[in-house]
Structures are given as C-alpha cells and as structure tokens.
Image (cartoon, rainbow, N blue to C red):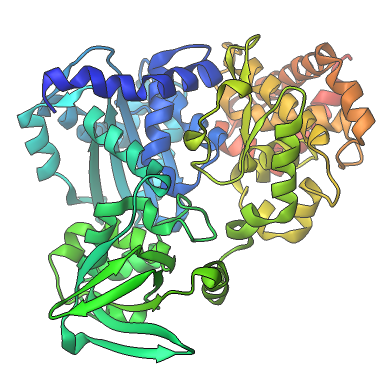
Length: 556
C-alpha cells in the first residue's frame, strides 16, 4: 500500500471501528479498532462478542508487549495479540514487529511478570505456560491501521513459521501481520458471499479424474492436489461456503487435520485420512489438464478447506498432499438437502444447524418487528450485509440495536444460573438439547429474551467503570447470574408480562448489579493470597456458589 492510498482504505473501515467503539468502549476508537480488527481476523473461531472482548483487557501499562490472548482448543493454538491504531498514515517497520515477537520472553519470565504493574500479566503467563506444556502452537497476530514498510513486509514474510525449544519442548510459532491493506481485503472477503460469483479452474490431470452420470446428474470424482483448493479459496474466500449450513463464515480450523499436515510422515497420506470435499456447481467442463467449473460451492468440507488454507505454506510446497473431490452438476433445487445430508454424515455439532432452526428464524422476525427493532444476527456476517441500518439506530445510546444469537444465548444461560458454562462452555448451549431448550424454550418471545440481554448490557457497562477491581472484565456473566438469582429464582425465563415489568425498572437491575459487585469484592478480599486469579475464579462453580452466598448476605 502506498501512503497516498491509505486514506480511502481507512475510510472504508472507519464506520465499523467507530461502531465498535460506541458499542463496547464508550467511544474509544483505539479499543474499537482493536476489537473490530481481531473480530475480522478470528472470524473462523466463532467467538461471541464477550469472548472477543474479555481477553483484550491486558492492554496497558505493564502489558509485557501483549494486548490479549485467546485459547483455541479446536486448533490446539494459543493466539497472542498486539494492536496499533493510527488515524493517519504511519509505516510499520521491522522493529515494532520484532518487539511483539520478543514479548514471549517477557511473558515467560516469572520475575518480569511478578514485577509488572499489570495484575492480568500473571494470567497471561499461566496461559502461555499451559499452552507450551500441552504442545500447542503459539499464533502471534499483529493488527494495525498503519501500512507495512518494505522492511516490515520482509520481516513479516520471513517469520511466518518458526519453531523454538522452550523448557525442552519444541514450540511451533506462527506470525500473522495485518496492516490496513490486509484488514480491508479480509473484511471484503467476508462480504464476498453476496458480491461475487465463484467460477474456478482447477488443475486436475485426466488420469486423476472420473466422470459419470448418477440419477441423471453429471458427477466428477477426482484425486486433486490440495494446493488447488487453497488457490480457489484465495480467489473467492468464504463465498465458496455460502450453501454450507454453518453459514459462510462459521468454519473452524480442525486440529486433527492440521496435525496431519504438519507431520511430514503423515501428510502424504492425507488423501486416505481425510473424507475430502463435496461440492455442487451449475456446470463443469473437463479439458486436458484442468476442470472449468461455474459457481463452485463446497457443501461439505469447509473445515478441511479452511485448515488447508491455514497450512498453506506446507500444502503449496508439496504436490503430494492430495484430496478427494466429489463434484455434482445441477441439482439447483436439492442443494440445501445435499449440504445438510453430507454434513449430517460428518457428525457436525448441533450448533452448526441452529441458525436454520425455525424458532431462530421466528425470533429474528420478532426482534425486527419490535417498536424499536433489534437486528438479531443468527449467522455471523449478516450485519455487514445490511443496507438499511438506520432503522436499528438508537439515538439515545448513539449505537445500533443489534445482538448475536450466541451472545444472547450466553446472557440468558448466565441469568438462569450458569455463569461459568456461559462463559467457557457456550458451545454446549447448542450441542445439549436440554440446555438449548432452557435458553430458547418452545414458544419463547423476543420480549422475554430482552431481559437477559438488558441485564448483560447493564453488567457490561458496570464492569467498564469498575476501576477498583482489575478483574472487572471477567465478571460480567457472574454479575448477570447474581441478578438472575433474584429475578429468575426458579432458573426459567420470566413470563412475558413479568419480563416487561422488570425491564420497566432499570434502576432495580442496576442496584442488584451494584450489590453483586460488592459481593465479589468482599469475597476476593477475604480470599487474600488464596485468590486463584481472575480466569479461574470466574469460571469455577465452587467460587460462584461462594459469591452467591456473599451476595445474599449483602444488604438489599
């Protein structure tokens, strides 16, 4: 990117940065940029807003060179984050990038961690140590609204992958740098399902493919170099997945697939160890050493594709990594059935399909029909494709009225007495049908779900100003659950009329949250040196029961 190209690129993302700043950080654009940029980079991890927001509180004095970190068990990866925000064109050189990579030494040094003024540094130290002991990959992610200098680009490219021996353990490191140019391209790729066609040309030798006709439809079976799939993804990004039931953006890296690709002894067996991909298309033409495909759509194998892309340097350097491709021509009216059937056979979790649950579609319509309409984002990426956003604008709060299905589910689950699992096991809400029905019971109305959402937003606001407690950002779901112990003592959503009555008394909710803060503060002070750290404290059912006891002992 040239310096002269910076302003138009920044103007493209500015509204999203300002929106994130207003919604989550009281207008702070530096923090808003960090949230927006990381949400774009980590789109594949399917984190809720709360899960994105919490780890970014490490930023500040004594942060050891890190702004935050995320644990991704599916990919067996610890993601370490650094963000630099500029409202004018600033070049990023290799010194700044090297300082970020070198932060690992500080984080691992107990003396440095103890001496730092940042109380969250010890949590980061434990997280990195645990990741190394589990033989996880350390993924360094640097985001900036500046632009890479030639030296910075060279440094970033030279450090994409590396290994380091730490305490006799070989640690794999990955380094990703997203300057403004790359962030803009990433954002546009997430929009691509509604913008571009997905015609591709795949290099497949005649000897590696078979054509047939099954039930009147043309079918191609092929043994293809996996690098071709990586190339197709680079061309069309997530538009290749628009028919997948997970939604175009909800595709995680699979740790087992990634492990096979990283193992030099197993990667040549990839064809035999992986189920391959199933795709549909409008038409295809096999000619010499290539297959020309019109509107190529992957309906099963999105996770495989995303993982291959994550391991692109390995995949593109080894033509021996092969993948089975099943391509079906036509079937325009049966595409949804094929997508669901092939994914059912792959045993995907219930969460992948809940976006298509009639109950969720009904809730989306209900939220949209409220006197003050709320945009209910059932599939990630829906919001960025909305053209008429003004109808969701709240003049009083100076932000948009919108919520994501996963964020709402976490808020409701916490209100109903499960703050630890709402925080750390949110996936089980969608995988365990009893939990799903607890949060989204048959016949539930949007107005009933506004209560847990309002309580969560009030708790979030209270935590933002809770400066006396360094673990405030970890406490949101705990506070929601404490409020729920008073409002929903039977651990069921309140009936419609009772929800409306409580929502009409916001001061009462605020008073309960304040009482909850006092309960947390009292227990933390009582624990003293036995306090286990913020992350462990707020994910523990045992500690929550103690907080609840303290809460009930507080004067009402």
